Image 1: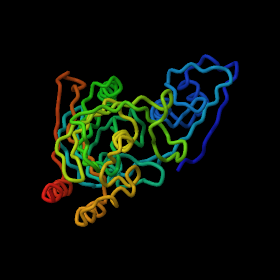
Image 2: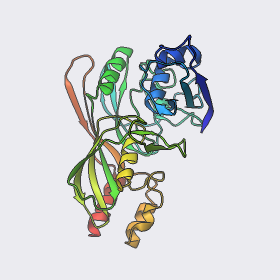
Image 3: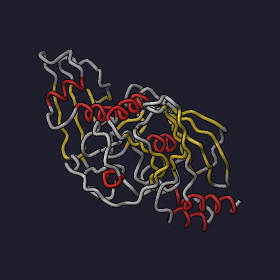
Length: 319
């Protein structure tokens, strides 16, 4: 939940300023980077609509800031085991397990990937702030798979540029409810905060929310499920889960955007298996980017965790 919702109104003296610059000057406790991230995530609205950081303010604009409670100032190093896929002087590629939060947030101060990183590595980028050491991008708590972490600010900046310019290849493996008809498809519906439940994201009407682009391809179809390869061109909060649910095929195990869908599974054994999964069937399986120093294109792959592989074996065996 948010600590508060702050509303600001633009007057004649501030009209013409960039949205992010205006907010950075008004909210001293937030860095411009964090403000830009909040704008990107749809946590900051102008006249009830999402806007870009570069938006030029007009007299009378109403700005709504809905930010989570600030995380703890210091991160305590914790000896949490990490699966390091690759490491050099500039970056680390980690295979994150499901159940691990990427960095501290409201109500979460320990057990995160950030806590583990500061224990295992002496040098990490500080470009994203003290509570996000080395963190260039995120995946959901109950999503497993690959992330890249920056060891220094130069690497962080160059990797962030690649994410912003959509030059990073991000592929996920997802098991969804239902039999997807198309062999391949694209979803380009905009995503923003749900007007009904502010803790959730939703597909919004044209002109609202942030542009979001998801590409999916069927890998296998089963009697009541479909296994997909999902590429995301943008990195909106909960993007894959929101888009696939909007399409009518929520991710198996997703308790927010697929709640209750497990009750539609006809096979009793499969229904029990899904209810006991205790995570969403979403895995960051491939990640490719250009090395920030050498310029060499790098690609990494992560196999499905044993828990998810066993679900596929059971689903395939139930055909």
